[in-house]
Image (tube, rainbow, N blue to C red; front, side, top):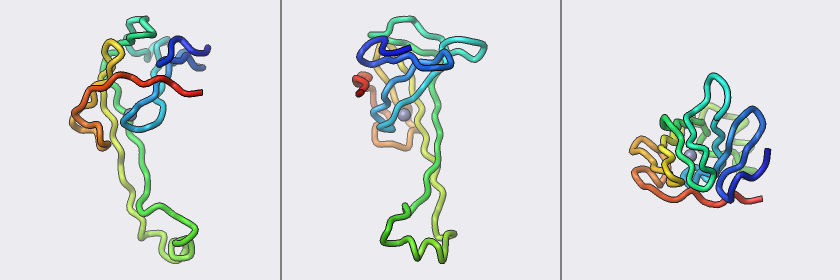
Length: 116
Ligand SMILES: [Zn+2]
């Protein structure tokens, strides 16, 4: 486990992790075991197949110290929003498909260096 290259790190569970510039967070992909993604083994210019689909949820508006009392009185005023990140990683480039909900939808950018 540990850094495989500036952009790719191996983590527990036979997975590798990269930083997604669309979500501004890390995504982990299994590369060992029955449910593994295809991986070209090149940590400098990784290719994963098939595409990577990540969905997560957040609630709006966010709870802040200023609206906490209001939120406690009416928690149903929050709406659950689904975030979608759908990408192909090819030769170290991440291609974001059009169904992404973040600002990089439809764009292809290099995988950034991992921090820390
Ligand atoms: Zn993402």
